Image (cartoon, rainbow, N blue to C red; front, side, top):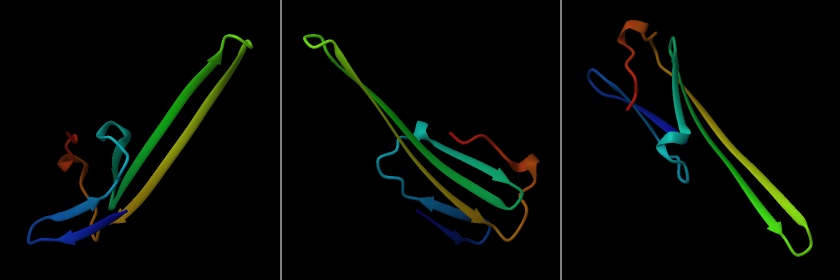
Length: 82
């Protein structure tokens, strides 16, 4: 799901998440760990008014990858992702 590469002053983490929109992706940093989570919840309602039946479908897909960096990231350096 993800790769991590080191540049001179930066670490670059790349993750491929096909089928997920940006709104479905969450990134959390705790000390030296970067958590990348993707969640996709879908709901579908089908109604048959002739037979008075309804069918509810719910599907959930969740992915998580943890990347451990060789240092702790100070909280004061964290900025919101956009």
